[in-house]
Length: 286
Ligand code: CNA
Image (cartoon, rainbow, N blue to C red; front, side, top):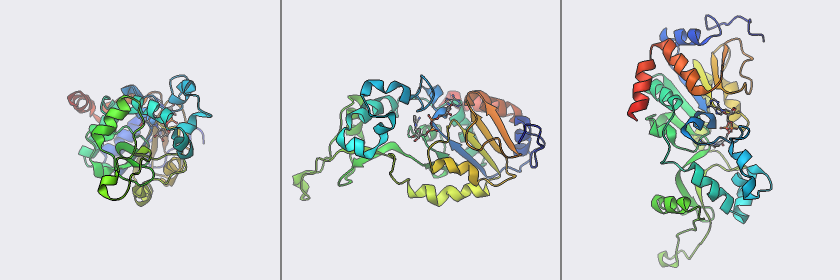
């Protein structure tokens, strides 16, 4: 498809036309799909950006390959690298970005049908997006448990361990009658080869009923999440805010590519919608 291919739903393939689509009331079930790129401006590195991504900076950890840090079998043998990394990613010290706040604005205007995020940093909630509108497809750092007996591990103790990059061990003791466990504790984030939360499968069909899809800050390289934009039927417009073109974005007549950093792209959309002041105010107030 060439850039001149005429759009079907939109007046043209531009952000202004996307804004008109929203303003005309035709987009009331917006589905948003996000990845690490929406949090890089908050100071959290993504995985795959060359030089600044986590994978580029893992050499010091002596891993067989960067992905090993999120591999359960590797974690069982050597959990330390994960905890070194967790220290850099742990929620609590970061401020949501303009992109997070834009999604929160969509929610407060009743236009957000669902946010699917691959991020584990919990910044969606900090930005005020209601929990029921968020699917944390790869889990989050919000809770943690023993990988053997699944006994939950307390949040405050977890914070202390992560701050020291120390591996926490199961708290189940002989005292409670179940016997001592001492298994490794892992946050409820989805490692490679682990199942995604059931909520992802329960909600993903919302992508099929969307009247607008926004894809922000993801390389779309992790499946099954990466298949979500392809569930959006033509001619429903899909807008990509990303440094690079990814997945099948750009191949539908109503796809709009906004290449560059997503906060800049989102601010342009907010300008076109007349929401810019509200967006900046909401961001500053957080
Ligand atoms: P990724 O594979 O690292 O890709 C990030 C994408 O975002 C790339 O296409 C970048 O070009 C793009 N990008 C980077 N910065 C910006 C920016 N400012 N504006 C626009 N685009 C940008 O990350 P994915 O999320 O696609 O990969 C999935 C993994 C990454 C998930 O399992 C996450 O759990 C995991 N991850 C999450 C976080 C987090 O929670 N913040 C951080 C690092 C990794």
